[in-house]
Image (cartoon, rainbow, N blue to C red; front, side):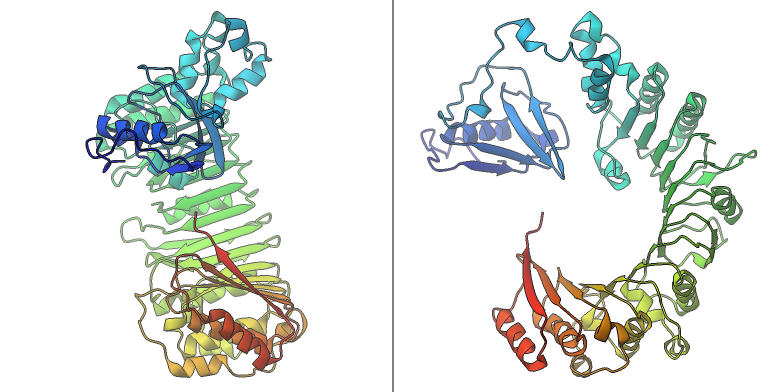
Length: 540
């Protein structure tokens, strides 16, 4: 739309057969020229039936004509309606009535929401952007200050809230100024209903730290917060984490955290996520040790506090999900006890990972092997499996699903042996998911000897002969699909119990034209009875 010039476009140009239009606008940058081009597009689509705006993260701030738009953002669909700001006639034909919205004939016909029960109205207001929820006070006396009964607040800029997994709700025109956090404090203090879910994401400056701490203290006084998400994006200064008594979910991102002196733990905390967090080992131990009801723990990309490396012990009787990402600051991770653990995911941030972490990775794997049924490992784990480990008789008796990331172009003999060791150790594996990561930072060449290894018959792999029914090979960024076919050949040759082989690749990636022919050859030469399914996946 930025490139469309009305001077070069004939006004009588139309698109008579277009039924669907998809745009990716950046509304905050919508100037008059782009807006005129947008209106020209709508005027030119005589038979338009569906209009989709993808990636709309802000409300319209420029002139907006009165019509209804269906917006798609991830899995969320909502309708945006705006009053007219200037006169404009859109001729979209009789087949597109949804682009026109007539004014209601009477106020009674227009106001059908006010008759709903108050708790239903409050639930609706809780899901509106904060600005719109506040503006509803002007609708009628019965609506006045109803927004103060909302139980959910998610405030900040879209980028940072997105990393927290929350929906953007921008409050205030200048989130950089200190007045922004003061307005947030005013909103929280105005709420008359228990605040159950609070998410705040903002790049705080040093002069805002005291204001942030004052806001957190106010939340503690509310005493009702069950879900607390904080992304401070603040590299200097320490945040004192309040002792929320009702807290069930805690998510911290890029924060330097200190626990209060009288910290007694979160008795009800069930989910803990720490990403890029600075915290002392003593406080880390207290946070985990005094949260005995944790069922999910995610710890990724820790940052050392001074010269002190990160050391973590997990002794959690109810833990069911463990996700851990390692980097150079992590010295030790020990799973002391997790008898209920079902799913574990281990990955790292550095390639190649330092050799001193080999025992660390192995310790995580072996300590969770007794109970875990679903295991996810990245390419760095294969690199860390030592020869002593590969020669052991260690097994994973309960693992039914394994997901592993492989970089075939960097697959040397050590990593290959680690991969075979994993398959040999999982006696009852039923589903294997392989994500092929063709990372150019490893190398741009392939060892021919590795391709030969994938073509060999292997004995002693119990799961391949008895229990493995499904293999999924995802080749999202693979430049040479033919290399990925070597994996297909390996399992078609060795997995005698295999029933279905799924080969997934993204539309738009470089795919060899003879891939289907090569897969047919593999099926014939291996005499496999497995069905080969090729899935062409469309990127969102």
